Image (cartoon, rainbow, N blue to C red; front, top):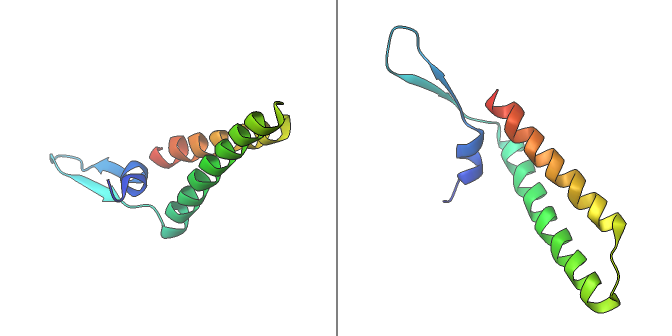
Length: 82
């Protein structure tokens, strides 16, 4: 489970006429960007939960940031697999 993001972003291309596949690993910048996005998503989710618990109100700004991060993560995963 150490490099689950790297494994998820690795593209496998079948070689014509053989049963082998070529694995194209993602760049380290992309992997670190995904780690940062997931960490930001977790921290914003905790911040939203604390905001609801302490102030008894919902913050639409934090929720829109969470939504944007989820869209970014899903977009990267879909386009990286190509």
